[in-house]
Amino acid sequence: MSNDQLMDKIVSLCKRRGFIYPSSEIYGGLAGFWNYGHYGAILKENIKCLWKQRFIFDREDMLVTDTTIISNPKVLQASGHVTNFGNELFKTEIGTGEETATSHLRAETAQGIFVDFKNIVDSHHPKLPFGVGQIGKAFRNEISPRDFIFRQREFEQMEVEYFIKESDWEKYFEMWRETMNKFASEIGIRVYEFEVPAEERAHYSKRTIDFQFDYPFGRSELWGLAYRTDFDLKNHQLDYLDEETGDRIVPHVIEPSLGVDRTVLAVLANTYTEDELGGEKRVYLKLNKNIAPVRAAVFPLLKNKPELVKKAREVYESLKLSANSYQLEYDDNGNIGKRYRRQDEIGTPFCITIDFDTLTDDSVTVRDRDTGEQKRVKIADLKENL
Image 1: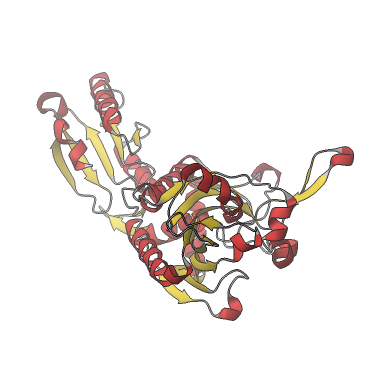
Image 2 (image 1 turned 180 degrees about the vertical axis):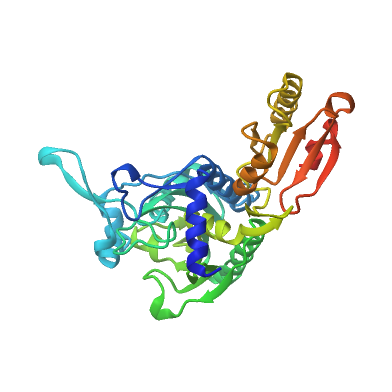
């Protein structure tokens, strides 16, 4: 299929299965704005949770924060955003009457971390190197939003600001480079590194690598890794007391920045699959089970047999109690073939069917999404097979 056809099919599946909808569609929509439906919201949340685990909670040198979308107008003036972004910033008014002040919606989450730097250091006394991460919304008034959720006016970022001594920047740049590549592998996508030339880098960057992905419309930026030097802390007139030497220094910053929405798009584009199974064409999302919105769906073979429904409910409720980190779904809508096709399009790795044999031997049929193969598994062994 052509690349245009692939994008159209992804958009269609996302709307049909409740992943992503146009914002305010009943009023004609609004360019550059998209809403996440049930499965899309869970997929996005799973990606964010995995990012938090790998970039923050698995480490001992990281803190987490959650800062505001609107700040004192001086913040984006000091950071250079008002000068360098200009018309791309969304203006907003704060207050009413004579006390009205003009500010902007943030164009990145990073500045909230920088302006809180003193508070963070005073509260936690971290030693260099250390980082602060957050996930949050950002806004850019794009002239021509396009390509589904690739270029939006409202989007979400997963960013780390990692504070270091200047002499160590290359070492920690490579460390985060490796972390980002591992994360790409873990969510099942292939990225390509592009060294951004000086004339194309952001105003704050001394070195930037774009992690690019082959979207249906071509290869383009997915994530960025930037060496921001001491640009931000110096502009905000902030420094750091090295308690070991007694010296006051301005730390330098390495910034791994990942767009949530572009990551979702990359995952969808990478996993959208068409094949033939049992003599019928089918569509499925070949999602890694660690980010799939539904890990397993539980079915009664027939929904008009009370004994099967009762047993299916027991299995479902039992699995839910042990499913601390993934989502399960109970599905009895339509015949078994339609349920399989629906769960394939959602990207559900496993379907569990309770049949009449289950009532006598406490085993169920587990179907693998990718191969369509089925095997009998004891109910007691289900958890370890998911």
